Amino acid sequence: MNPPVDNLIIGAGPAGLTTAYCLAKAGAGVRVLEADPRYVGGISRTAHYKGFLFDIGGHRFFSKSKEVVDLWDEILPDDFIDRPRLSRIYYGGKFYAYPLRAFEALANLGLIESTLCMASFGWAKLTPIRDPKTFHQWVRNQFGERLFGIFFKTYTEKVWGMSCDEIAADWAAQRIKGLDLMSAVIDGLKRSLGVRPAGGAVAKTLIESFRYPRKGPGMMWEACAEKIKRFGGEVAMDTRVTGATWDDSTALWTVSTVRGDGSGATMTARNLVSSMPMRELAHAISPAPSSLPQADGLKYRDFLTVVLIGQSATTLPDNWVYIHDPAVTVGRVQNFRSWSPEMIPDATSSCLGLEYFCFEGDGLWSSSDADLIARASREIAVVGLMRAQDVTDACVVRQAKAYPVYDEAYRDNVAAVRDELAALYPTLHLVGRNGMHKYNNQDHAMMTGMLTALNIQAGRRKFDVWDVNEDAEYGEAGFSGAKEALASERPVPGRVT
Ligand SMILES: Cc1cc2nc3c(=O)[nH]c(=O)nc-3n(C[C@H](O)[C@H](O)[C@H](O)COP(=O)(O)OP(=O)(O)OC[C@H]3O[C@@H](n4cnc5c(N)ncnc54)[C@H](O)[C@@H]3O)c2cc1C
Image (cartoon, rainbow, N blue to C red; front, top):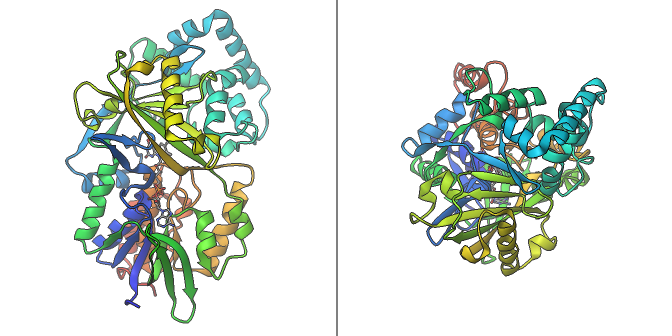
């Protein structure tokens, strides 16, 4: 067997590549093992089809963490563009600007419905549900029952495939954080009156512009992989990790992998960093953890995009449109030209991504591409964003485990697996979205990678990656404080002591 690698990293998504980049830059040995034969970037990859480029969902580059933004600029210094954000909600045959514009929303809803919404909001404020446990209860407290029914229920149930009474309030608190009806209405009034929001913290969901690599998020992660190689690291594609065995006597991991053609390999490493789904990791590890039943309790929501290409008579200004309307099954429509004109190989074609939320193996997931394309062409015409006859080409991209599910049991299940693996294996590091079963954005995944690189350099888990909040912020002193504290300890790159 070959000599051990300092650091084996499972997954070339944002979490794995960030960890590898930081370690390789510090002079440590890294090998990244990526299951995908073609793309780096994980869910943040950019897929290619006949010169058309598209995301798995649209990926805004926005972070409150300066360290993450600095790293984006370091990896991709010349290729960011600033994009205006325009998104709308389609409901009941009408479009609503999102974030809402007060007068437009009032006009669309009509006087009676608007009055009922305000009354139901007032009632919710007078009679709040104490300690809300579910998404439904949380949103009802914040916006009232009526607005919950119009603007939250159908879309959320499309996304998660379960009732809003089964979704934990945690998810709402994280995703709609900082937004309540008053701030949405005040913001909407300002927008209606043409007043730009001045200074102060704006809820993430209301942000008006964002940065974007001119050829999609994959451009960032392809550049990152190239730089890792330049620092002396390796990125092995088409290499799926199937097993990881810990040997107490040598303090080494032996990792088994398989390629698409069925050929396998094994390799040893001092540190193992995993961004593969927690549930799968628990099954890959031996000796097997006793928390396997809790790992099996972790659930995921899957996702597919039907990309429709054509010469559309409709000019669509939005980056994306949320489809709340229950008349169609599509959940969201991405307009890739609005993300960046360089996503489209010519000046006139439209390229729309119709996003369907599903479970791996269910009817939608297992439908043939031809059936999915027919469904998407029908539904895009119902919504009025493109005529079915204008579609000239199409393709389907499936993304398994796009969303870690936050159900009632997830928190306890994650804690059981996390705590056991941490106690048994000091040189195993969990990072990223499915790696930590955290519904996060790239910045959070990256911050867990940056801290993990520091932990590996320190030779112990000095920083708790589970303390990174959803804004990718870490502790009181932040990541810079952590880095400075560590620098004063003279770390040894890639060494575990
Ligand atoms: C629809 C949608 C829209 C989004 N929009 C945004 C956005 O606007 N802005 C934003 O910042 N974030 C967005 N995100 C979130 C972002 O995609 C994730 O936070 C980010 O990709 C997580 O990075 P990761 O490295 O943790 O995981 P992933 O991106 O999932 O990468 C994990 C990698 O590990 C590989 N892997 C898995 N198992 C194995 C194995 N056994 N062996 C080897 N390799 C393996 C996978 O192939 C993958 O490449 C969005 C996500 C979705 C689903």
